[in-house]
Figure 1 (cartoon, rainbow, N blue to C red):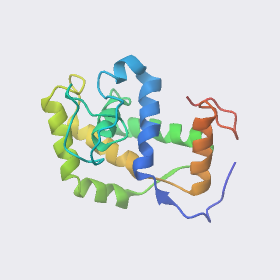
Figure 2: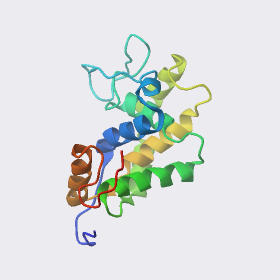
Figure 3: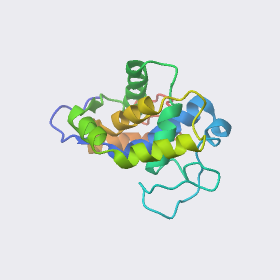
Length: 175
């Protein structure tokens, strides 16, 4: 399946969060993931510097939770391997090529004071796995937010999630 190159691309930004969460659940299971991130609403802004009473992010769909989730995705791989893995999952979900915008990545990285604060707050509370590299986790989170897609590919991704993790176009079981 190919949509061609004429579609307008956009960075996925926060729409990467549910995909990353699904990747972490697929890799580790609910029990392990829930040791690092809650599933309840925070009641505050998506980038608020706050944790739940257990010292964990409230849920995976706010910045603190997404940073934590990024730390769980293939941490044993080098950065390029982690990114390649994420791209393969996104492309399987979309049934087509996904791109990356380095300009968005650089912007995310250079304006990330709150995200750095969230990461170090979580580190101080012992929320990360032992040995987790905070800098690598943040960089990977910024990279995930900098993936690019178009509305047609995103609709296939949504269809894949709605179809129990099976891409409705290709038939590939992704999750």
